[in-house]
Length: 73
Image (cartoon, rainbow, N blue to C red):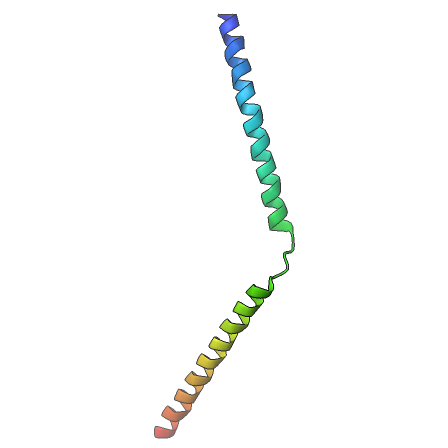
């Protein structure tokens, strides 16, 4: 009985130690990603500029519609 327990304990430790190491390494990497101040890429900046231009266009169109509807009243 004690030999079986020791064998199971050794196999369990041989399995758990690498898994624990992998999880801790993953946790460190995720914490670094979260806490690191990432600079936006040029592609992201271009997408954001394009989206802002679309929003500006839509807002201008809405203002134009509002002005026309107020003139009609």
